Image (tube, rainbow, N blue to C red; front, side, top):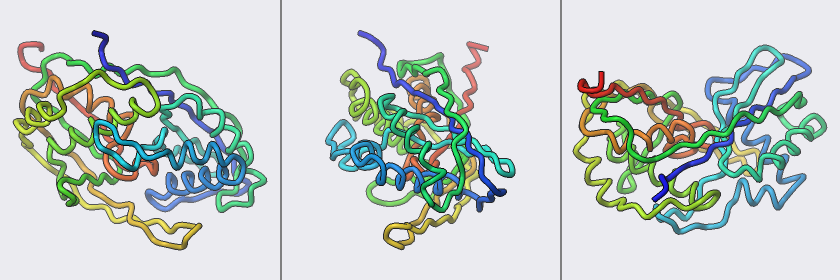
Length: 271
């Protein structure tokens, strides 16, 4: 049986503004997401529906609000010049996004800038099969991350929940935009994940908000940030967490939330 794989198509968009641009902490991704949504809604309704409002989906995770086929990574910003990195999971939408950003200069939106170029980076194939034996990892939560369990927002990143939300998101992305993963016993995987213990937790709550330009409503963008360490038999879970480095995990990943980095420490026998 072929190994389950998630494909990622990274792209970078470079812009120049007529005057220096400044963003409040955590604001840049929200501005770009709102800008892209407005551009697509105005220029290509079909692409808008496909990228920003995908159809309801009932898959392995039971999601009724499907994940969007992209996430923003932290914006690289200097004076009038900035670069927006994106991870895309449906290569067919890249040209639609490119065309929308090409219309930015004349759109009269909050973000006043023009597109200089789009760079398509080499695609990445992430195998989700087991890796080398690992019993200890550190996970950094680089942007606000919100995880829920049983309808409640967690204050700390419980490992079983972190793994479940990562696994469900990756599975849904594959099912909607790529090739569905082979049948996996998610329930048994979840039970095994419960044996992993958190050995250290140093996270803090981040408060962030956005105001919808369309409705005027205010929405929370916060969550926890920081780092946590885990110990146990992590071998089968590590590929899923490495994939989550590319997909983000938790709520509001298209805004750049849930950006994680995973640092494994191989078992002593493999050092």
